[in-house]
Amino acid sequence: IMPPAVCFPWWYNATDSSGVCPYGTKLPGEVTLPNDVDFLDWVAITYSYLPWVVVGLVLLEFLMERRGTRELSVLLFTGITTLINEFVVKNIVLQPRPGAHGPAPSAMRDQNGHPIGSCSHSCGMPSSHSTMAIGFLFLTLFDGIMRVAPSMQSLSGLDDPNGSKRIRQMLSCTPLSPRPVLSHYEFMGFFLIWMVLMCPVPLMRVRLSDHSPSQVIIGCMLGASYALAWFQYTMTLVHKNTDKLGSPVFYGLLTHNYAPLAFRVKITGVLVASQKRLKRPLKAGGLPLRY
Image (cartoon, rainbow, N blue to C red):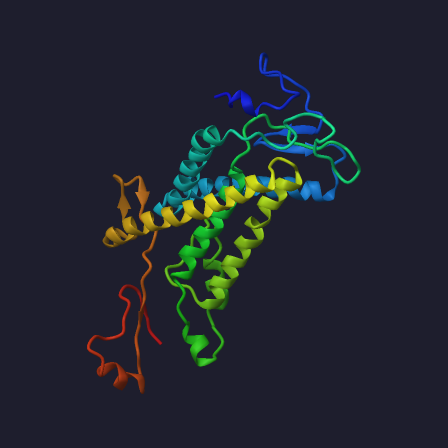
């Protein structure tokens, strides 16, 4: 599908879909390799591809290992939000990418006075890379923070003998918690990794001049909004199908491995007397945490 003509840059010939970009080389995935590329440009190119690398790894994990509803949730989130951005929002806003208006005296230039811009001829508002990256980050935040519970070791001050095993269980390409309950340190580590991977993506899109600051800001805002709506929707489905957790679904094609947000704290010792004075016991329902 051809993008709207209003977004075509000055150097692009829409008649035969040709034209030589004066700013660099267009790479797959709407990424520009600038002329006179430096180290930071290569870092920016790498970060521009990271969201799609995550999608590819999640797809690989889904097809070859688990075929789980947890992985499917991320794939559907990526597909739906990308389609909304590319075929709805961009066609409404119709804002070109940086450098589309030509090498006029007012054109964008770098610190050396050279014209800069994007080699993509599609519309730029909003940045889908930013939407995807911040969407993944907020999914990690929403899903992880709701699963945090104090571990027995953190309450007692003891070392965790199963610490290395628990770390291995956290290894996943999917930006959703791989465990139904997380300790504070597990959540901090899991979220920190995704923050390092995803947070620089919007800045790197501006670095390559593939998007303007306003385009990545709107993309980030949409990513956070999409993630919130998607998380609320998927949690509704997950809680309705708690009894199917770990079982085949959709005629055996999938495995329901997206655990609900639930845990139970067993109160012992002196706190039991306080609990007995309550009208209802203190519990959150679901998976037990026995201290």
